[in-house]
Image (cartoon, rainbow, N blue to C red; front, side, top):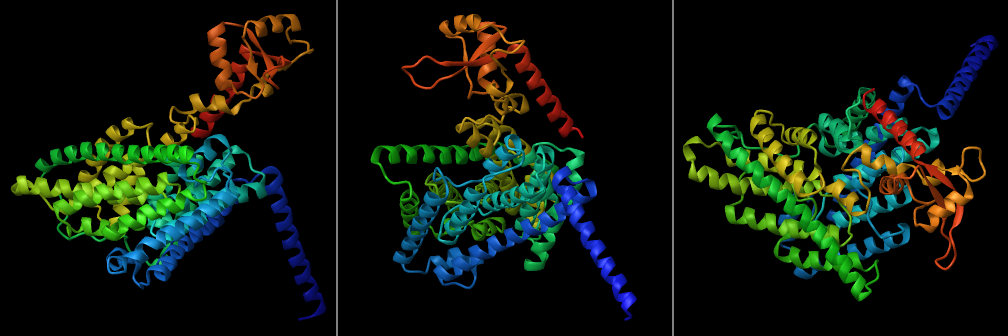
Length: 562
């Protein structure tokens, strides 16, 4: 190559590097355009999908090491042959490690989950806690690897949200971009976990973003496909469960049975969720009364799980072996009912005891067992117009999971993609629709939204409720001394009458105060000490509060319909 040619190549390379550097600077300062964002979505999908695969492999590696088996797909059967003291001690050790991790790396000792991702999308411009999120992922991996009875999908969703939050920090992205990228990461993680690209994309839209905006659809699908490709490169293009060949709807006369199954699944889902919340409340009460250190709570939880696992090893981990046995009709009626009850208790102990993991896989297992039990009864009473019990197990699996997640569309598709059985759509859809209608009324729409309601984060009612919490009174008030601010005398008259708002409160507290008093404005004060008078900072006008609220509603509507 001549010197002139080398010089031209060098100039071309320098130009490309400068272009990439300038392009990156533009993305960081002005935000990505559509094409750039699609490329970022692809990259985030690859990373989030890889994280989901690594998380799953990490659980398998830890289970292989501790339970001394090479086939984690049949861990429950293998655990039943181990010495009882080994089955007991593994969850205790895992709980102790989990407790120490959460104690050191989280401010409250609580595992972050899908509920925190939904909160991040609604209230924090698509961001979640990164330090606590990484600690929660480690805690969940150890929980599932050492015998905890929960699911791996929830931790993977939050881990993906941590990845997107880090990218958003680099990009300095706004709220709309932040939520869209969060949806991309979640879609990729769910797709990689289930080998379900359609369901992964819809899960991100239906559960996390809670809207189906057109502008978000393309990048989320791109990320979802990327996550699926990563999963299939690792595990192959296989379904999680295999059904018997005869799992089809026998006659249309059988559809009323699935209506009944849907109602039962809705009640079972409600019981599952309420049992978890009751266990959490009980554990909180016991901890407060006894003074148990928060780092010791997961270890005591592990002791209870280990004791249960000695007699019922099927509670260990995500439970896919038992779910598969239910879908293939390998369990009897008594086993199905007993295992569903024991699994519900084990999941409640795990989550209420602040070990890691999610609720999706347990809801699949409880649903499959519920459907199988109902199917055994139905097919024995009406054998001439009944199909396979596996079909009832499949429909029950979708019914309970959909009610727990509050996500009938994505759950239906996940069930289909997990099994590869699309011929049973009518039965599954009927069951899911009825179970969701019933189950979501026994709680605040879903397990995740109820978790948030219990923390006084009101997202279940929609934007018209939670947007008020985004505006601090101090940011909307008019400071004292301004042209349009009221006189100090008028403000102190209202303060002495007890009509004022704290500067640290939000419009969620201010607007009801306006309704109660009928005032045009309210003084804004800073309360320092109980024995000192409040410090007058300014006044918030009713019209200013309503104007800020209306702008937020308009922006939300524009995002959801763009």
